[in-house]
Length: 280
Image (tube, rainbow, N blue to C red):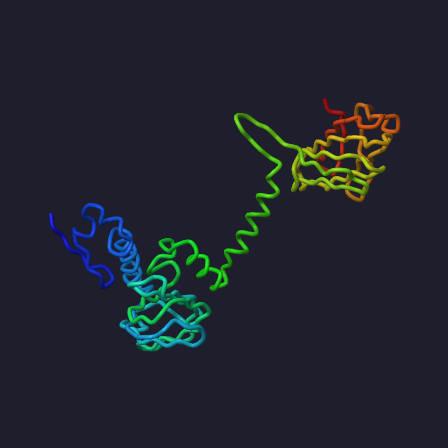
């Protein structure tokens, strides 16, 4: 069956999706999706078009639009994206400084590509969809607009770094965070991993931050004497008193031989009470 449809000024027919033609990014199904996104934006009053011939550049840029400002929801201060309908790599990102009648003025902060005269001007949620862009173009768009992907990636990297000591596979498998040889006070809190390992290089304080009111957290410490032995860790609340050993089973730290390993489980409970137990 033959068919034809015009979306956002572009006409598509059954030939655009016949055989392998549907996969063509410029004329096939991806192009239809992009045109549909632009058409939807027009219907919602979120987009404008312009045939103003210009080369993408930063700073003040002026367009004559096909739509009147009263029919398009683009107001001063609004972030917009300007893209060539025929070549999405020709684009600008900026904010609206004025829109009266068909005279649209922008302050452009990012520009790329060569001269065009088939501009689609949208909010980032409309028009030639950001989601349809190659990843580098998307990153450039968002970074230029102040929505930094670099910042988001740094946040993700930091989060992943904090999770590298946790692995769950075919059941629960928890990897200890090894702090290495420690000669100064160390701290535990709900924000860091539950299992921590350290080698005593001196007599130190092992401090615990108080929990959120009404909450409890557990921390398991694997404590290893160094080559000297006899080192004493004091488990205490952060800046507070030493913890309690309810079973009176605190190890005789000073009698421990070099490289002896002890597991201590700390329960930090309501009222910032620290209870300590020798683990198995």
